[in-house]
Image (cartoon, rainbow over the protein chains, first blue to last red):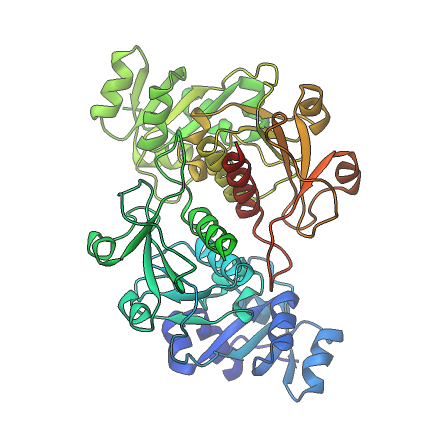
Length: 244
Length: 244
């Protein structure tokens, strides 16, 4: 039983609540039984599981050689991102980021809200899209984004810190998702994979990117200035998937 | 300048952060310039505006006879729901809730997350739906839901504490939004208005309601157990609006 919040393994793990520490260590934190189960199902490598008490899930991890460490509530609170954590919290290896595949892609351009980012990852997995996040985005591997995506991180491919130009270079046609139709041609899913650009919650997409994208897409709405960014991106992915 | 957080008008207004106080007083709080502007545009009655400093917006309110009260940062913090409030915070009259109209309706069944509820209100306004919230829902007039809907509360009709049976009684055909197709007939927007039932984030819709609804609707997905509730409801509204 680890009782001290200064235990070196606890200190090292708790650091992974910060994006920079995750990048440096190539590790992330998975909080709660659902995320840990989803990661185990997907064959994600787990370094350690911190748990308040041993149970079927910690046994599952232990059976494939993962270190299981029992900790006090104070230690769990130090590791977790939520208010009253019931655990477990696992340290897991970040999936390696290969070359961008030539397939339907949702590109998160400076999305700042972790709930929106996670919701977009969840919808992307549901509609068969891979996910690219620009360097200005919230880190897709943050505990809040992981929680919001409810395990979908492990059912599609994610690329963090990538610019839209690199997606276009992989043979994906960029399409700007715009609140008001700019008259540009709609993306044609029958021609090839679509790279949907979803802009920042407050500022939308940069003008430079809109000009650069050969296609654009607008969801017809009334009464409102815009839809929520995660909703707009999800409806656009749904529409492209329907067109396939 | 009001400097005391115990000022009776401040105390009375701050109470409106609670649902029960809002119901009893028939009043709500609007935080931030965008919500106050949207409410003024919509002709919502405002009792008072608390502001850190007089500006064009407080002048707009003042010009139609609204009390404008300058307050200190401590008082603003007492009134507001956000961490570092810049104001204004306005006390506004809750719109009266008339009989349920016979038109497309999204019915929030025990939606608990304020962000999801606000996002659904925003999408409802965008796709021409009115909004019904069951008694188990988060209060649609809470500051967090108002913020998340970004002013859309004032561009459609909202009915709080209403059961789906009352929507059906108004001549709206109920359709259960389900993560997995149960084989029921899709709603036919050409026959008449649709009442989309959107279930709780963790538990979905009660079995009783699913049986009762003459139609059901499923968004085709892969890889995930379900979509985010606000996304699922928004896509369903989009699909019904496209069918009109």
